Image (cartoon, rainbow, N blue to C red; front, side):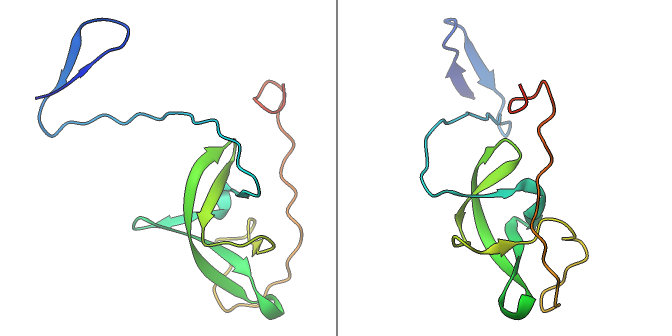
Length: 119
């Protein structure tokens, strides 16, 4: 049995074999020059995350990425993108690597009143 001790009491919590728990811990660390992309731009297939970018001559390129923590509705990209890379956010389902696209700037929706950023 895997037993863990709760910090709020002296009681132990035991998990039967092959059971596990998942915890999300918010880490508040300032990152300079972090690359953030909207969550909807990141695709996941069989444990591999990727984004579509606009390359030379406006051709779509697929890029594997490694995401870090989530910040509001965005992912911190730890590997796979460089500053200045143009990530496709809208129309991801229609874009295909090698296709030529007409990119337009992405304008995120305004925060809703009562949310973390829309206080």
